[in-house]
Amino acid sequence: MVDFGLSEEQREIRAWVRTFVEREIMPLENDVLRRERGGAAPGLNADEVRGLRELARKSDFWGVQTPVEYGGMGLDAVTAALIEAELGRTFLTFKFGGEADNILFHADEEQQKRYLLPTISGERRSCFAITEPGAGSDAKAIRARAVKDGSEWVINGEKTFITGGCEADFALVFAVTDPDLGADGGVTCFLADRESGWTSQPIDTMGERRPASLVFDGVRVPEANVLGEVGRGFELAMQWIGKGRYLLPARALGGCERMLQMSIDYAQTRRTFGAAIAERQAIQWMIADSETEIEALRLLVLHAAWQVDQGRDSRHAQSIAKLFGGVKANEIVDRMMQIHGGMGYTRELPIERWYRDLRLLRIFEGTDEIQRRTIARDLLKGRVTVGETLR
Image (cartoon, rainbow, N blue to C red; front, side, top):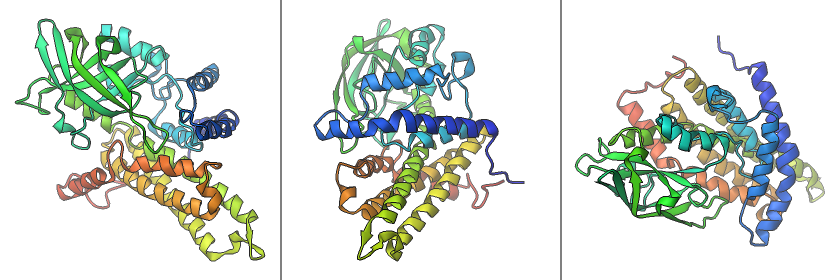
């Protein structure tokens, strides 16, 4: 039997997050848009994020997927996807606190005290530094080097488009330690404190996100700061990249839901030639197509998350969800702007903002082309069989 219902706990959590978003985050949207029009940095400021997290923590909402033994909620993947979709109903980027990069759980006891636990508690901030000017989709092409010098490693190289790179006080940086082996046993992950000397510069983009360029120029890292094993860093990187890819289209799903409702409301009140534009077939078809694609995306996202919870290899399903979500979210936001006409194009409404932000979904953490390659290879190499979804 196929059961598409949610558990009582999942419904309660989804309702709590929706209420939190509507009461605490959405009221900040107009102020943020006004600040952005005035030239301020995009998105919520640090004080707003801190206040929202503290408010959520009072309700014991902390560390959504962090294991309970580390002070988190330890929620399953499906519930995490539901939460992400609710957070996506606002264009303001916000994540509940209490999270740490999944590969940080490979830290040894001393590293956990210095990096993992302070990150979960919110005392420290990290960034994942693997992408380079010549190594984006092809992560195996990284050129940053780390050379052993006594009890230290000396790192040289540049990283780019690093999320949170300007705010982080330590980086999980990947560098080549054996050029002959490369990604097949010659890449190592290091925990590099900002105090060790690496620098960062923001990169302006068309959306809210401001990734960073990181420079490592003779940065010395003690041998004790190797995360995992020397030469096994690429495996850790793939664990990070492959974890939670379904959460990206889940957030886009929430944004598309809200924009569609905004457009329905607008179409019923906006009148042209003596009638509401909702009566025009052209508008109705845009609404119908968008609703159909939203529901399809919902099932793809939740199915990928369900596979994670079942302990299955969910990479194929996640690639499908991310590819479909990236393409369709961009088509949907374009339709919603069209329905709103000139007002949708202005910076008075959040649709223009979503238009810019959602474009990133087709690029970061695996481009559309990489997802297509993954899906096709899985089928051509027999890793996945056509129609085996419910096997």
